[in-house]
Amino acid sequence: MSAPVSAAAPVGAVVERGVVALREEVMPGSWLLRLRSPRIARAGLPGQFVHVQVGGSTDPLLRRPFSFCDINPAAGTYDILFNVVGPGTAILAAAEAGQAFEALGPLGRPFGFPESGTLVAVAGGLGVAPFPLVARAARERGLDVVWFNGAHTANQLLPAAVLPEGVEARVATDDGSAGHHGFVTELLRAELPRRAGGVAMIHACGPTPMLIALAGLLGALDQEGQAVPPCEMSLEAPMGCALGTCLGCVVPSTTTASPDATPGFARVCVEGAVMDWRTIDWPRYQALGELVHHRVAPVRPAAGARVGA
Amino acid sequence: MADLSVVIRDDLVLATPLLAASGTFGFGFEMEALGGHAGYGALISKGTSIEPRVGNDPPRIAEVPSGMLNAIGLQNPGVEVVAGDYAPRWGQWPTPVIVNVVGDSVDDYVNVVTRLEDAPNVAGIELNISCPNVGARGMMFGVDAGMAAQVTGAVRAATRRPLIVKLTPNVTDLVSIARAIVDAGADALSAVNTYVGMTLDLASGEPVLANVTGGLSGPAIRPLALHAVYTVSRAVPVPVLASGGVMSGEDAIEFLLAGAAAVQVGTLNFLRPDAGRHVLSGIEAHMAARGIDSLAELRPAAALGVK
Image: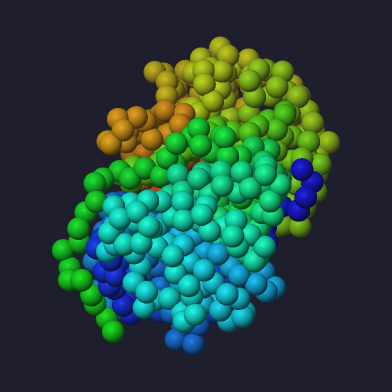
């Protein structure tokens, strides 16, 4: 309890206006927004996020957290990827080129990378968001990348064009319209034992059931006495301040990473969003059910599918 | 340069009329790293209990129109950490820190305050006798004038530090409770804590918050809080620290005109790390535009809060 307060977490975060350079519906209902924001783009790391103020009024009130989907430091831009699930994301999906959104970032703990070997990236649904940047960073470090990508249906799989070269892709869809007919964790279950010695690290992001299934898979390997690679997961939770003060975005945790995270909970914004899977209290996490609730049914923006260049 | 200082008590003078509201600023460390102390005359800490508290299960927060619901459940590291580890480090800051205290019994409150007596850099105590998110026991002191007076009196006997008591608006007769607390020795009142509310998930039909209910804050409650401040400040002879959805200098001015001695900024700290500076610059701009040099000039005599 006497460890240093996690005041270091927000250090380096800045508030900066991000000017819309591109807004594109990259998959049905999923939008990519490219913001020109040089300071944040220069500082952001794979797995970190920005907290975006979507409007100038009091409704919607809170900022929205989005992982960096990709960053181009030379151009001073970063991308976020989102589904339209409520009034905040509807505003973003209707953004015009040149429009500005103020964002706070970069925030949170980034993904770690192994020295060498193979990185396995596991993405489900919109959990694919952080992985273009992760995969590129991994390739730049000379790592092999195997990407397990699951989605409901084929047209909700992120287009391969956004992947860096040399990434080996495995695909699963719930309806069997592409790749394995079933869950991405089933693909992984079949392949991981064959690769176990060769997997240096797993990065995962996706819906809660996928993360629970992955934790179950890793736990089973552990019980069998097999090698379990380090696994880091990017988590989602309803978020208030993103600075560690409101204690709103907690998930059940087995460790105390800072004194404000009293035993039992860790803050997604500070101890995460990327967490070691072993620090998550899985039975309690599973018992909680879905943490993220959307107040309104999905809203389709009226604007065209693409603006900007 | 206008004089914006506010005297809460002779030994608690704020350089500006703004305080960071309890529960929206942690214990000051995260916001300090971002320069977030600027603009504030004092910081009020997260609620501090005798033992560490884990808090409620998530989801703990939910957005609603122009507001948010929270049910954190008083997660905090306990008074030993606050007194022994945090308080010594507050001495590095120019901004005074007031410790918000929570408890389940009169003894709890007295024990926390007594432990804090040995701690340095505690500029004052704010009693939270009305947390809406920890079940009946958390709310009971603040909704009954007799019990509110009892806990206030017991804490008053345990400390000579400035004592502020935070009112819950979830009562039928706010004024009688406010008067009882002042009669029991409070130096100032905070008005108001959050309003109890809830929201449902339309798909599941279930409450969004694991706690079912939460405290509503943000601009949605501002007119309600303004009325509470207006009413209470006319009924008691002590300073009233307003709290309720302040988003701008204009909002703070409105509370000052209604009778507040100073104004707390809460939910805005979640929206922008420069909340204190933002609100203060709005106050300064409002005063400069009218050629006003002091807060006393700003407030008409009728709104000074003294009968």
